Amino acid sequence: MSAALQVSISGKRGELSIDASFEVGAGITAMFGRSGSGKTSILRAVAGLWSPEAGSIKLGERLLFEAGVSDVPVHERRIGCVFQAPILFPHMNVRDNLRYGLRDGSIEYEQIVELLDIAALERRRPRHLSGGEAQRVALGRALLSQPHLLLLDEPLTGLDRTLREAIYPYLKCLPELTDVPIVYVTHSEDEIDRLAKRVLSVDSGRVIGDMSVDEFARKRLPSNGEP
View 1: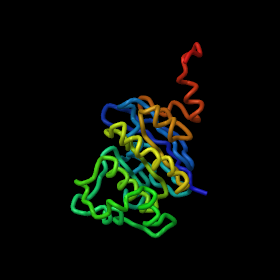
View 2: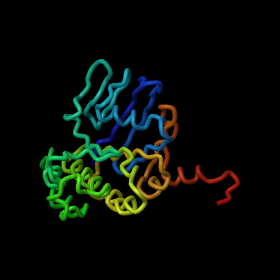
View 3: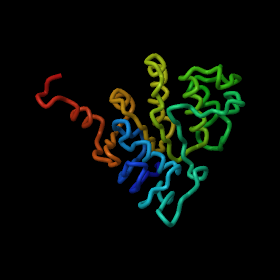
């Protein structure tokens, strides 16, 4: 059974006030909101890239952050992160990028290479990858670190429709590969419909809704019931 992520934080990020509380279990949970709503700030706090002024962050029984008391460094949090722009080492080929930070665990190298269909890319450098290929490599590297939590920050933003369609199947199979919580930040309703099981709605730095995907879809329907 995977450990749940529990977040209750507040603080200022520039002009935006963050005051967010939520809990996330296994499977893909979408964090949805318009640009500038605070989604990425919340994700950065969980990853250890921003320290809020108050509150705490726990992953199961492990305390990752408590204001003024504890702040576990990024590299010790056991969190896999995939961002909008894949962050790959340009001087390494795909194989070496995948093996960077590799840990022993239930997710094996050969399994990831096959699952993400990247065996043919292993000798290439990042500059010779398409956007979709680079994103799959970044995802594979995050998984091979055997994370206890996976954070995906709008990983399909910037990809054209063809590339987005190509990478959807790889993202959709993640809950079958690992039972850790997966937080998927997006402002795309289509991505939520196709990938998530649950939705956290964010506005002005606050989590204002926590619902199933079906509930989220019903809320989007016009009040008169017309399609």
